[in-house]
Image (cartoon, rainbow, N blue to C red; front, side, top):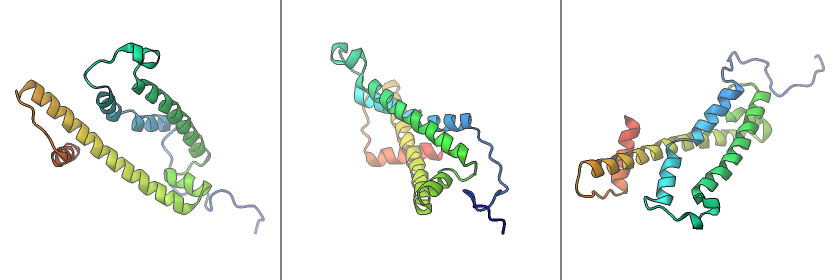
Length: 163
């Protein structure tokens, strides 16, 4: 026995090659945050009727300030995750870092929760696209308004995600 203290990992190599750089990792993290969701939320909370600028903080809508505040938190979190994964250059995503820093079970649960969050976000994006298509369809082609319930929105979003 050589008497060396074992490192962070039991084996030195897995045979897998890490192809994602730090910059590409940050771009991937940001692309998960910036997408269709912010457009839908801004439209829902501001609405089609303009608000007077004298009741807005510094003349900007509250949604702008909310996205700015959360954007700073997301950037800091993205850089922290980038540096931690750069310190542990192994394939396996968040499971590797979380299981080494906290506990393997917590890493396992985080991996499944990330998978479910991704699946739900695609479903919500599908519903948002379906709502937008129906709004534009009704405005452009139909003189009457068609009311959609939760089942119709779910099925329409499912169809959009399926396509």
